[in-house]
Image (tube, rainbow, N blue to C red; front, side, top):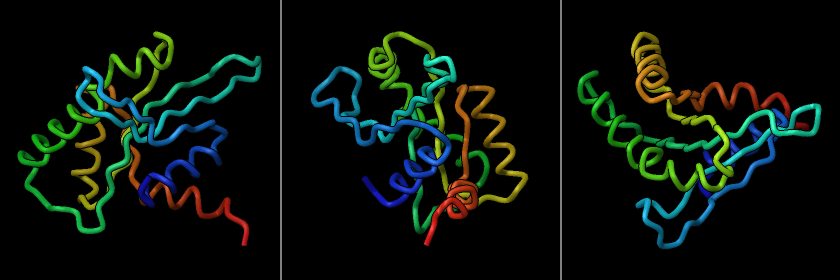
Length: 144
């Protein structure tokens, strides 16, 4: 687990989620052999309120691209991180519905950020969380 995945996991803990990290699938037919994070949040009645598959892709040196190339790069990344493992995650969650989240660098202009968030929500049903926002929410929960 890298540092960004660890911070994201701790952020989810602080929001009341139980989190499993670096879930290995070994050799399986879905292509990838590791999921970054799976999380569940218990409902007040004891059932499961939410199920999440979270992928974290944060780079200390992000590559800046024009919008057309950015959309194509995101589609390729999402295909590898979500589409190819969807049957596997579906099995892990017992066939129950789950949400797909991605945590990314926020290296874009605010207009481009909104374009990316809206497009991924609309076309891929993926909720984008910017790593800067994750840090802003998580750091105040720490006690030193």
